[in-house]
Amino acid sequence: MSEAKTIVCLASFFKGEAFMRMCKQEGARVILLTKEKLKDEAWPWDAIDEVFFMPSLSRQPDITYAVSYLARHRTIDQVMPLDDYDVPTAADLREHLRLPGMGVTATRYFRDKLAMRLGAQAGGLLVPPFSAVFNHGQVQQYMDRTPGPWVLKPRTEAGAMGIKKVNEQRELWPLLEKLGDEQSFFLLEQFIPGDVYHVDSIIQDGAVIFAVAHKYGRPPMQVAHQGGVFITRTLPRDGEEATTLRALNGQLMRALGLQNGVSHTEFIRAQVDGRFYFLETAARVGGANIAETVEYATGINLWREWARMTLCQLRGQRYELPAARSDYAGVLICLARQEHPDLWAYQDPEIVYRLDKKQHAGLIVASHDAGRIEYLINEYGRRFAEDFLAVAPPLDKAPE
Image (tube, rainbow, N blue to C red; front, side, top):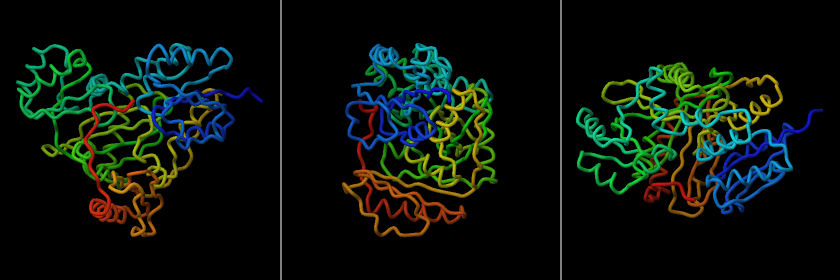
């Protein structure tokens, strides 16, 4: 029997339990590096061989020193990011330790919003008109030729974090002045109203071998900035939207060069012309219980399959994707006024998951019938807003 592979998991947030459990189930040694403030979370301790706590997982050279110190007496076979913020750190560590997988340059296409837009555009996908924020003269020329409003986006924050809407040209310059030396880490993009979608996929040898398309309720940026109930649900698989989105996702993965792993990609269908525009992508599993929603719709757990694929690659084995179902699921989550929201009034048999998290209310529903899911999430979305919904100011940056 070959020696057990050792996987170092980076987790800046509490997530990835299924990934670590599958690594342990497959015979790997699991080392968890996470933040000190997360030490009391319900980590899958039975699947973790060693755990180390740090103030931050991104501060250099501290993280490189720490992992290199671990490597003195352990053979580290792979470093895996469990959160979006850990993706560039893991890439940097792989290059330092000369491990296989995505390096720094490849990773930028899945973390840097400017790089991914340039890559998508070069690959033939529609992208909202955008400008880097390097040269002020070029930014002015961009606004002169591109009708507003615009959004000022941080290049490496996750999701809608730190995005500012700019309605008039005169509003931009004070924002850039306030950013100071940080302004080059932002981009300016035309704001396009429309419905937002996401495709979650598994890629092997550069080809998408699994992909499922979902449609959000309100766009995530609206929910993040204005409050509301986060909703997403599986699209009818043979419909025009899902078919188009899967094709665009495959085109994007080829353009950006993801060879092996998972991805979470967002598109917007513009109200003005009905076309799909690329918004952003990430080489990791989607958050907000999207992974559980995908699993209830398809039987495929993206965390577990990512772990299986990683270990197959390390062992020189061929990864085989399990057979997938073609059911439907939807998730609803909101910040709640109550510390422990009581969902006793929600008793439909399609409820398959109840979120257990302070100050949050959440459900996942699943069915063979897409129409039933659509009805339930619309009805529950209205009731959640009445029964639980609380609103908090948006964050500009993820908490340390």
